[in-house]
Image 1 (tube, one colour):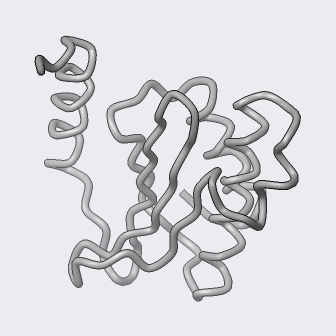
Image 2 (cartoon, rainbow, N blue to C red; image 1 turned 90 degrees about the vertical axis):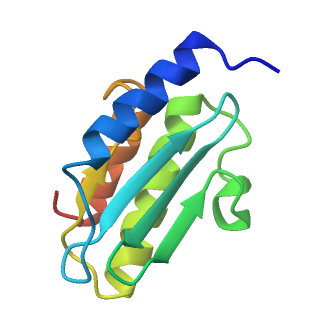
Amino acid sequence: MKTSPRRVARLQRHQRVRKHIAGTSARPRLAIYRSLQHVYAQVIDDDAGHTVVAASSLDPEIRQQIQEGTKKDEAAAVGKLIGRRALDAGIETVVFDRGGFPYHGRVKALAEAAREAGLKF
């Protein structure tokens, strides 16, 4: 199976940005992945090499809320959830990693909702 040029370009953008962005235990990385149907977010401590907090549009907590609505509404719900879970874990500031996706649409909605929930980045 051949990889599409759009996917290759996104992965190249992601690798280029990841050369400069790394999450520490003091300021972990908020990584976003956007598929065609769902959106995923993780707060990652790259020093320790583990995920501290994660949320996605598949979480049962928000799955019932987002039965109706747009994908942007779904992404905003994930942003609120990841922000709340990060604050509960004692994380206030993060480094934002958009994963090579444009800061537009669902990625922007998730980031703004996480900021409204109390995360600083």
